[in-house]
Image 1: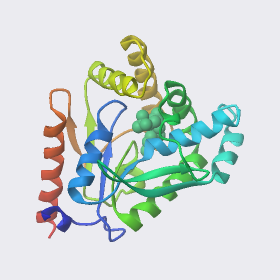
Image 2: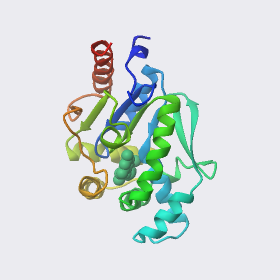
Image 3: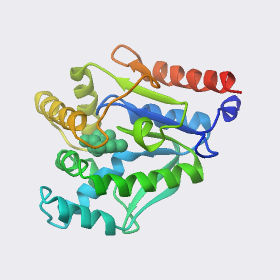
Image 4: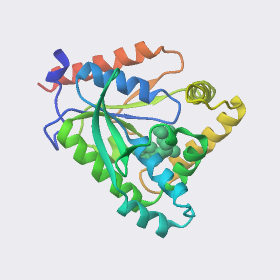
Length: 241
Ligand code: DC
C-alpha cells in the first residue's frame, strides 16, 4: 500500500497521524477508517479520559477534588491493548483488565470527563501511555492535544471542525446508537459547555497552529473527509521523501 511509505514522527520510527477537534465533529469515524487504510491501529484518546472519569464515578470520588482524582489516576490499572475488529485494529482501553467501551459513552461520563481532564497529573499519565503506544505500534490518534502536545513532531496533523448544530446532531445519533435518546437542544447545550471548557483550560487546551491542516466537515461527507486526509498524508510522504 502506497501510504506505508508515509514519513514517521521524527521523534520515533512509527507513523503517527494526529486528528484533533471538538466533540461531535466525526473524528472517531474518520480516524478509524484512515487507520485501516494506513494499516496502523486507531487510538481514541477521549476513551482514556472517559475511563478515568468512569473510575472517579464508580469510586465515588468528588471530581472537584483535584488531589483525590490525580491520586486515583496515577494508580489506575489502564492499558492500551491492540484489538482487531471488523473496522480494523484499535488500541482498546482496558481498565482493571476489562473493556469499558459501553460504560464510558454516557452523557454523565462525558460531562465528568471534561472536569477531570483539566488536571495536569491526569493528563501526564495518559500522555505517557499514548506516547508509549504510538512508539510501539504507530497509530492514527484522535483527541484534543495530539498534534500540540502528545506528538508535536509528526508532520501529519489535522484539525477537524464543523458547525456546532451539525456536530450536536451527529453526537445525538451516536448516543442513540448506544441506546441513549436525548433532545437536540440538550446535546447542543452540553456540547457547547464542554467545548468551552476544553478550549479554555490552562493545560493542553483544544487548539491548533499553523502546523495543522484545517478541515471544516460541515458540508463534507465522511468519505470526502477520509479521502482528503488520506491524500494529505500521502502528499507529505512524497514531499518529505
Ligand atoms: O472525544 P471525546 O468526546 O470522547 O472526549 C471526551 C473528553 O475528553 C472531552 O471533554 C475532552 C477530553 N479529552 C481531552 O481533554 N484530551 C484528549 N486528548 C481527548 C479528550
